[in-house]
Image 1: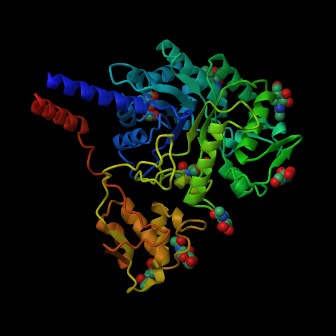
Image 2: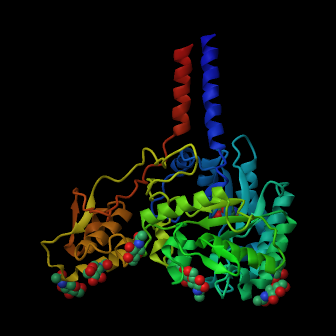
Image 3: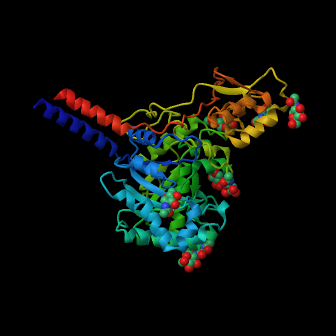
Length: 477
Ligand SMILES: *[C@@H]1O[C@H](CO)[C@@H](O)[C@H](O)[C@H]1NC(C)=O
Ligand SMILES: *[C@@H]1O[C@H](CO)[C@@H](O)[C@H](O)[C@H]1NC(C)=O
Ligand SMILES: *[C@@H]1O[C@H](CO)[C@@H](O)[C@H](O)[C@H]1NC(C)=O
Ligand SMILES: *[C@@H]1O[C@H](CO)[C@@H](O)[C@H](O)[C@H]1NC(C)=O
Ligand SMILES: *[C@@H]1O[C@H](CO)[C@@H](O)[C@H](O)[C@H]1NC(C)=O
Ligand SMILES: *[C@@H]1O[C@H](CO)[C@@H](O)[C@H](O)[C@H]1NC(C)=O
Ligand SMILES: *[C@@H]1O[C@H](CO)[C@@H](O)[C@H](O)[C@H]1NC(C)=O
Ligand SMILES: *[C@@H]1O[C@H](CO)[C@@H](O)[C@H](O)[C@H]1NC(C)=O
């Protein structure tokens, strides 16, 4: 009898946990990218998503390790197709069918399903800097993926989308009412929106108040951060009180101008980085995200057509992201690379603060610094070499460590390569200028990181819990 009672209790607890993860939070999700030298193990990331009540996640590929970790979690998933595959997916239905078979259908079989909601064709393939590399193949690829999903009887559950970049639409005058798509994209956008509306799929698009601020002298920081005191931008009789509404309404005009005023909109990327540029700091990122969440909840924008879902850019920092558009690219995370909160924020109403990743495995507490007792005339050259192989974005202009001076910035560079090389002794040589220390060289706002220990395969948690529950059952009976 008591045993049954305990089992019932256990069942109740499990149900309580499941209903917690079902929290919808006005459909706010995160982008989970994995361009990191030492990625946090997928099982830890999924725990992080759950403990923060994050109900939706957007991926940039379809890594089986990541999808397996998401199986049975009830988290809504967008799987991504890398830009490099778009051309072959347009050229061949067979290629699209095997992509869908390997990366979607497989996860709908059996008990531990992955709740795949969208397949994203490309990652912002219309970015202006890509020119015509992908554009001509995107719609064909999207159609082939859709047909492959239909063939697998998944087309009603899984929608095909194409994430469009912040620079796919614009307004020359700066007034939202004259918003339109980039001239070279006009035809493609009409094809894309026809495809999307035919299949009841939403339009995925990046809105980037940070880039607007970074590139546009006329956009103030207060206007970007939803400050009430910011000077409004006028457009005829309308007044826009923040940068998000300005961009969003520019987009709405662009959609109307090609005849699609009613398509559902998903903001597939929006965020604020914390390093690598002026005003990219934790306090500004915190102010931005709090402002954005408050704004989305109030829905008091100048248009009633608010996004149906919003994906924060991004969950974690990634030290291997391409920095051609700016050093801030490696610092979009709400959490640092190791899953630790950068500021006070929460994804759901029930929580006050972010919950950190637990039991993270780090390399031992050792750093590589420059040996000040040596002749340092070649130190800067060695530092540049280290930086070409590792992440030095924090010591470059605008970075959080840009003020530490020479030769401490040489130490930063040496340590960066040493950590990335998993503490291999020879990676701290630098022609005899490197020195391994157990004293943390960090100061104020400049952190000298210790990398994650990725040498161990992930522990067998399911087996651990299985044995624990067996033990419990044994004790209770
Ligand atoms: C896309 O694929 C189709 C079918 O193979 C082909 O006819 C078309 O030329 C391709 N599109 C482009 C732009 O190459
Ligand atoms: C499935 O997705 C992965 C990751 O994006 C990719 O490497 C692989 O080629 C895909 N499978 C097929 C059959 O295309
Ligand atoms: C884009 O297409 C729309 C609808 O066909 C048209 O009215 C508009 O003039 C086009 N704009 C450009 C820049 O080509
Ligand atoms: C610059 O911003 C102000 C509002 O702060 C607005 O009135 C003005 O029209 C803008 N100018 C341009 C060129 O966008
Ligand atoms: C933004 O950056 C500028 C230039 O570095 C600085 O003067 C200003 O204090 C910063 N403002 C905030 C709120 O961080
Ligand atoms: C980074 O992006 C730029 C612009 O898209 C591209 O030219 C360059 O090849 C990329 N670098 C790497 C390492 O992928
Ligand atoms: C600095 O590097 C140059 C070229 O590699 C080398 O000839 C010189 O001996 C080095 N100087 C010191 C102090 O190590
Ligand atoms: C280190 O700082 C010095 C002086 O501020 C600067 O000249 C040098 O370029 C910096 N080195 C690196 C690798 O950033």
